[in-house]
Image (cartoon, rainbow, N blue to C red; front, side):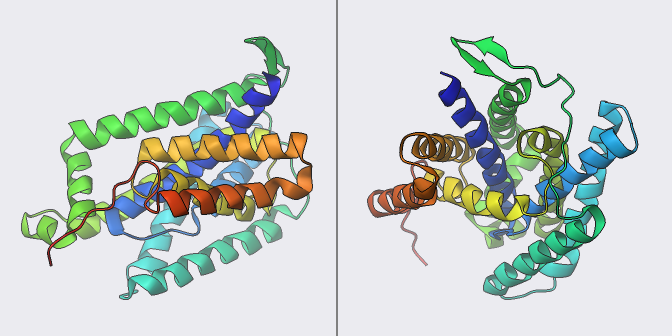
Length: 285
């Protein structure tokens, strides 16, 4: 049970990255390669606020969310909006991710930094296993985020507008939806989310300049398994990747972790190319 709880916590991190990918994807059909790096920045800001500045946890939460939201908004304005070819956006957002990696190294260095968690770091007994408070918080946070986003997209006017954009961008514009404003808001929301969760991810992974690259790859695998545009799929995909990663490391060895993850990805793509929770639709054009 200890192994399962650890795997669920790792999978929750990948699921949160995939959720950030989806927030941007459904609003603009854009894949933001810098999403994981935004979460990395949130973890570093959490370290600075809690350790260097000795600020209260709630204040650090607000500061991290605000800073990363601003960075995400600047990314949309500079690296996404001026680019007309959607395929080139992959290159520009990848450039932003490299820029953020370099900036993190210059500001905070290359050594892993310990981010304290508000609930402490003493393991507790859960369902016959042992887990740290941050691991339980990550599992609950991922589930809560999916539930809130699903309610938002199905029960609110702006959420349904985002779904309309995802379904047919031109038709949404003709119906009076401000597509550009919602796309910008989605980028800012994904940055705000990345800043908030940095206070949860940092204590579990440490704040380190290589964090973004490792999370980006496995978050993408989680998204591909669950299905682009599906938030429940992102959660399930992240959990599956976490279980496979921890199980492979425990029973096969660390050298087989990446091999097993991509073997799972290839299997899903062969059987369900659109992902487990997404449906491929034919459309008359």
